[in-house]
Length: 453
Image 1 (tube, helix red, strand yellow):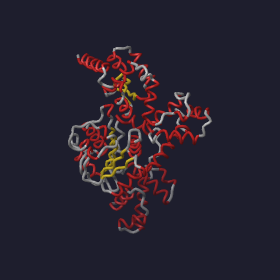
Image 2: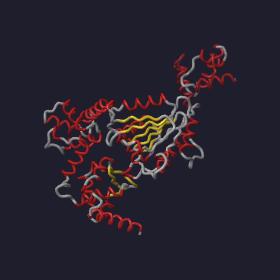
Image 3: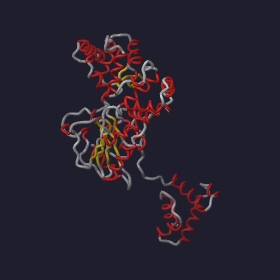
Image 4: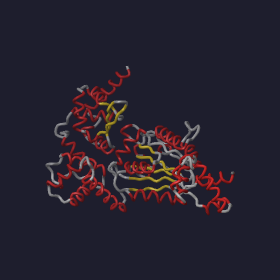
């Protein structure tokens, strides 16, 4: 009986069912004995799994193996928790039109194969798709993750640690770890990894981290346990401002390097083709614009790709604008060149250059100063204007630049992307020294003070 139980345990716990010869060699018993014991096992479970009677030989073994694993021998692997709730909508939005970037994933995989642990950083300008690359990797590999978001004030070391700690505890069942620091958590997880397993933690936008001087960004550890890796992204920086010093292997992939120019250009073209041929939101409008001008698809793709300057954020704005008819009065060559020129052209279209709109300035400046998601009602209260007028600015004038999210039942707004934030900060009209914005700051203070009372 003991031999039968041992054989049963071995047979059902393997990834694939062992045949009689393999079982015989593993247990050091004869094949006739294995055959006899397996017969006892089949008879034992025939009532529980009646479908066994419909199979013979190897087919019968596979059915029994599958059923036993499902019912009795679940693998002792970590339970993978869902994505962090605060990042689900971001991840889904980033991967919705994701295209290409295979060279990045392959380079990261090569780095992990060549090193027992380490830090791998993707460097690139705003809009080059760094966040989307992280989102795609997290979506496919179910990796623990954290997205630093400056415009939402979700960019502090304590928030990062709290989120990663909860993810690791949930995934790996770490007891008594609610107050553990990151090195301790990583060591605990490393001790639970089985052969061939890795822990990859993805962290986006190190350049948006707000942290007091001294120490590594987000207090990332200098040393890492074996089979633990970090996938990081950040904007370019000078070496004298580097704030991540480590004693383990590290590698950077700079998306701006000339060796990746062709890869970037092909990925941009793939994205454009996807939108004009497949994207249900915009393909019809784009098709009408292209066909009304008798532009061959290849010409459109090539010229828009060149105008994008290898920037996906440019495409995110310009392609929907074309589809909506914003550029019906322009030819292909007249489309804006690059992301900053696109922002500037929209700024002019809103009349901000010739006759700055005070309400629009106020709304943008309030969003700039508050920094966290706020509802239309709060913006109207600070600006001391009608809520409907603010709603028109948010939904009609600047909707594509703002991120809407549901916060405790209210629709709230923040500035969508750091590149637009940079553009606003560089505009003379948004200069915080101007009288209008000193008044807005005073109104913000008064509004918050009233709320506290």
